[in-house]
Amino acid sequence: MNRRRFLGFIVLAGAAVSVPLLYRKYFSFLSGNPIFHPSVLSHICSEQMLRQIGISYRALFPKENSESQLLALLVHAKAFNTAQSANSPLSAEQLKLEVQKDFSDKKTIIVNGWVLSVTEARQCALLSFH
Amino acid sequence: MYIDARSLDENALIEGDICIVGAGPAGISIAVELIDAPFKVILLEGGGFEFEERIQQLYDGKTTGLPYLPLKSAALHKFGGSSSQGGWAGMCSIFDPIVFEKRAWVDKSGWPISQADLLPYYERATPYLDLGIYSFDLKYWQTQYPSSIELPLDKEVFWNKIWRFSSPPTHCGDKYKNIIIKAKNIHLYTYANVVDIHANDNISKVDEITFKNYTGKTHKVRAKYFVLACSGIQNARVLLAANKQCPNGLGNNNGLIGRYFMDHLDVRFAELWLKEYNEFSLYLQEGKRPRAELAIMPNKQAEYGILIGNTSFQVLDTGHTGYLDKLTKLIKRKFNRKLHNAFELIIRLEQAPNPLSRVTLADEKDELGVPRAQLNWVLSPLEMKSIRKIYELAAQQFGMTGIGRLRLSEEFLDLKNGSFPDSMVAGGVHHMGTTRMSNDPKNGVVDSNCRVHNIQNLYIAGSSCFPTGAGVNPTLTIVALSIRLADHLKEKAPG
Image (tube, rainbow over all chains, first blue to last red; front, side):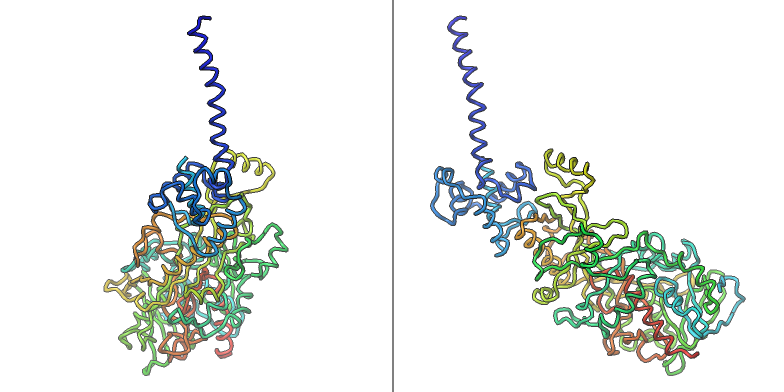
C-alpha cells in the first residue's frame, strides 16, 4: 500500500466512523430533548408535519422567527441562549403542563388547520430550525 | 280496508269520523293508534305503495336563498313517506328538556309543552321504529356494553347524549301496510292527493277536502276531524293552496304558515386526531348498539348564546402517521380490537327559527292544478357563531385532556363572515317549523294539541309543528307527537 492509498483509506475509515456518530449525536440531541417534540402532537403528526407547522408558525409570527427568541418564550421570556437551553432543557412534564394550561387559558392558535396550544406551536417552530 | 282511488267513480263522496291526509310515519302511526277505536278513519295517501316518478313530480318546486336539494328529492311521495327505503337512516334520539324551553338567546324558541309531556309518548313510539328497550340512559347502556367508555372531558361542558338505531331502518310503509289494510275501521285510499280544503262560512271548521289523481277524477271526503300529515313542506303548501275562502290560505290569519322553515345542518369541517389508538366504541355506530354524541351542557349554551349542536365521530380511514402506527394497528387488529386514531367530527346543528326562511306558493302549478311549493331557505349568523364555538370547545377539551387535537378544514378557515359553504347546506333534509306550535296564535299555527288555531277540527301532524328543531333527527319525535295527537283525537272524537 503506497502512502497516498493509505491516507485515503484512513480518511474513508475516519468518515465511516465519525459521520454516523455525529449524525446520531445530532439527532439524539433533537429527539432526546422534549423541547423539540410536543408530546401529544408528536404522536399525531410525522416529524415532517411538525416542521411544516413550525415553518408556518414562524411565518405567522416573524418576531418569533429565531431560535433564541422561541427558547426564551418557551421558558417564560428568560434570556436563554441555545447552548444553555440544550444543557438545561425544560422537562417533558413541565412542557405538558404548559400545553394543558394554554388550552385551559384559551391560549390557542390555528396553524395549518390544527388548533394548537401556543407552547406546542412554538416547539414545532423550534424544531423547524433543525 | 284498502281502495285504490283511481278506481273510484267520478265525484265519489267518502265519509268518516277522522280523515288523515298523508301516510308517512306521522299519518301511519296515528292510523295504527286508532285501529279498533270506535271511529271510521279515512287515510289518504297521494302515492301508491311503490315509488313512481310521476307521483314524485307532484312534490317538485322552486328553491331560492341558500342552495337546497330539489324539492322533488327532499321527501318521498308514497305509502310510508320518507321512512321508506332510501329516505331514512334509522337514527333516533329524544329531544332534551332545553329544546322545549324558552331560550333568551334564541328568538321564537320554546314549545308550549315540555319534555315531560312527551316522554310517555317517546316510550310508546319506540316499538313503532323497532328500537328495542326504551332507554336513552348512558349508565344503562354501559352495563349492557361495558366497552362503552366515556371520554374524560369536562362534565361541566360536554355530556354524552345517547342515540338509538332502527337497524336496518324500519320502513313504516312495509311494516304497517298489511296491518292497516286488515284493520276494519281504517280505510286506506292510495293515489288520493288533496287539492283543496273547504271550511264553513266563518272558517271555524273544515267541512270537506277534495282529492284528485292522474285519472282526472275528483272526489271529496267529509269527516268530523281532519289531520294533515303530509310532511314539513307539503303541510304548509296544502294550507296555503286552500285559498278560495281565505286568500292567504287556511289557518293563516297571522301569516305564519310556511314561515320559520328549519332544517338540521350537517357540519363537517373538522377532524379529531387522537394521541393513542382507541376503540371509541361508545361513539361509533355498529348495528343496533346505541352510541353517544357529545352534547353541550345547557348552562354552557346559555353562557355562550349558542344553538343546540351535537357532535358525532366518523372514522377516517387515513388515520395513521407512520409505519409504527400501522404496525400497532395491525397487531391489535389481530386481537380483534378495532382501533382508530382519526375521525371526522360532525356537528348536527339546529337552525334558529327565522321568519325569512319560508315556504310559499310558486306561480307554477303541478299536474293536478295545485301551486307548487317555493322554498326560500335562509340561515342567520347565530348558526355560524354556534358552529365556531362548538369547535372551539371541542378543541379546548381535547387539548386540555391531552386526548388529541382538532384540525379544521381550509374551507372552514377561509369562510367569510356570514357565508355558508355549499357543502354545509341541505344537511339533514328534515323539514320543520312551517306550521309551528304555540299557544299564542300570533306565534304559532297550531296549539299544544296540534290543532290549527281557530279551526276546531283541523289538526297537523309531523315536524312542521316543531317550533325548534333540536340537534336531533326528527322521526322519533314525529311519531311520539303523532301518538299524542291520536290520544287526543280518541278523547275528542265521538264514539
